[in-house]
Length: 104
Ligand SMILES: [Cu+2]
Image 1 (cartoon, helix red, strand yellow):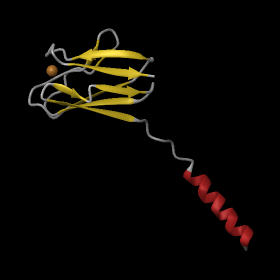
Image 2 (tube, rainbow, N blue to C red; image 1 turned 45 degrees about the vertical axis):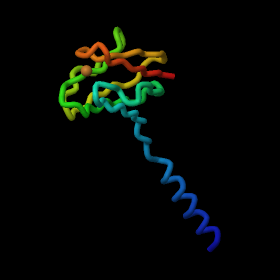
Image 3 (cartoon, helix red, strand yellow; image 1 turned 90 degrees about the vertical axis):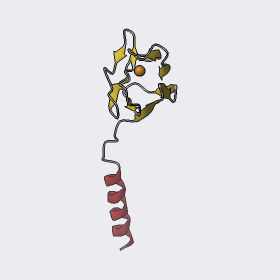
Image 4 (cartoon, protein in one colour; image 1 turned 180 degrees about the vertical axis):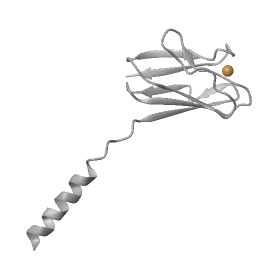
């Protein structure tokens, strides 16, 4: 009896480990023409999602690396972090908006 119970426990434990874990997502809110937080650290393969809480469109783009394209009011844009590095990014429409994505 005791042996059977242990076998059942082992099966239950194995089942818990079979699900593929969802990719990690990092969120940046755009509010009042600022990226919050203004520095995000992600691992290669992580998703970074920008949500726009302003009533005007924004973008997030790192020259030569990536670009979310236009993110409308209440919309969101995303990228998948690629090669390790420090990516300073800005908004195509508002030159005063700057932030940093660190991939490592
Ligand atoms: Cu903007």
